[in-house]
Length: 84
Image 1 (tube, rainbow, N blue to C red):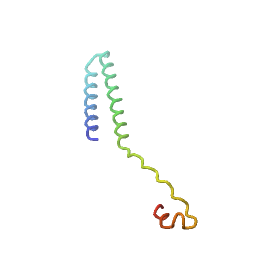
Image 2: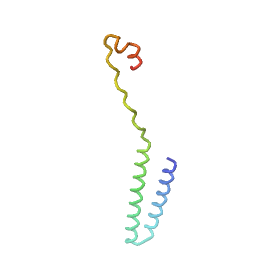
Image 3: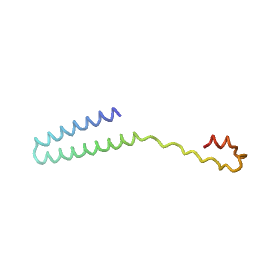
Image 4: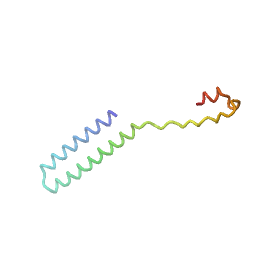
């Protein structure tokens, strides 16, 4: 998680640098910088989505329902009680 945060901060720094260059260049270069900025934003969003998916805990295995207790002989009450 810490490495992803560092990567996000690095991408934000790159985005800010690209925006600063865009402000200083002509329209043609500014459009190119805007495209770079857009690419960086997309990369940040993808990283955020990936970090969220990594935080999800895996689903546990479903435990089967115990057999119905009918007469207390098969399964025995104690066995059934433990399974419940």
